[in-house]
Image 1 (tube, rainbow, N blue to C red):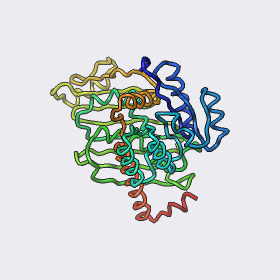
Image 2 (image 1 turned 120 degrees about the vertical axis):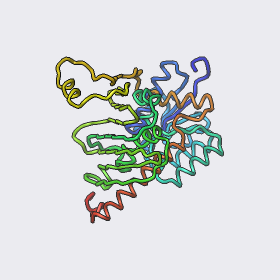
Image 3 (image 1 turned 180 degrees about the vertical axis):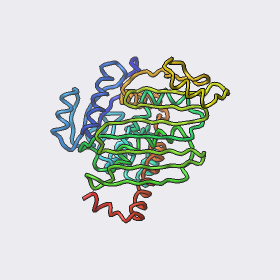
Image 4 (image 1 turned 90 degrees about the vertical axis):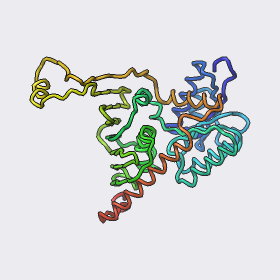
Amino acid sequence: MANESPIRVAVVGVGSFGRNHARVYHELQKQGVGVELVAVVDQDFAQAQAVAAQFGCSAFSNLEELFGRVEAASVAVPTVHHRAVAAGLMAAGIDVLIEKPLASSLDEADQLISLAQSKQRIAQVGHLERFNPAVRATAPLITKPMFFEVHRLSVFTPRSLDVDVVLDLMVHDIDVVLSFVKSPITEIRAVGLPVVTGKVDIANVRMEFASGCVANLTASRISTERVRKLRFFQPKEYISIDYGRQDVLQIRVTAEDKFPLSQLIEMASSNSGVPIPGVSINKPAVQAEEPLHAELKAFLDAVRGRRRPTVSLEDGRAALAAGLDILSAIHQHSLRAGIDALELGS
């Protein structure tokens, strides 16, 4: 890419996460990746000016000022504005990376998919964990996942409060699980509660797939600790991912031998450190990298090569559809339990 003309990019919406997009584009530009950060756009022009000054680009307050200046853009505005902003950019011939969740509704998501197809635009959804090195290292190990246990817990921050915890945090893991399982969801049971906002702040869901796989996911944005872990079982194998540490643990049954329970207890209780025969423990190699760097590089590669992005609009729609179904299941559970969600969230 360094030997070709750089792709001119912009970031629309430079709040806490949009600013990170600007930072990474700027870093990639300095590394000679083949990109030029041309501008940032925000309705808060003072904010746009501050970010522009930090990363050496222009600042605008109106989307239209980008037209004719850039070839691609990150859309990091609040979710309710995703459709309008991304549609405006694509109609002007600009490729887009749209932050998750893709849109506020499936109808809006379908409009974006249709427009991207008609305008022949490259459009990627910002499901960041798909680019986590640990997730990438795990993908080749997938055979037939049958049970997932996923936890994503965060301390409270005042960002992304325009959506509930399902579409704010859990949607990351929904996308990863869907990409691993590759099977339709057949049943969803969920519970969730608003605690400090007017939207669901903590949620737990059980999803069952046509393949027979079951996934339990918990997400909270009011925790006292930060946890980002995904664990799953498949035939003769257990795999654990720590998103934060970017590491993978793989435990495999490598032999058909069966051992008496008394022998297993003796081996486990001994201090010899001798592993259980027939079981291997492996830590697959993981190439450390900031996921946002990997995500934006993949977007730029798709733009330059006119290729389907790693996380397509259809992938984003699937994660959104599952998230909305989870919210519906939470609502139905609240009704059965006699909980007034709005009253609890007030």
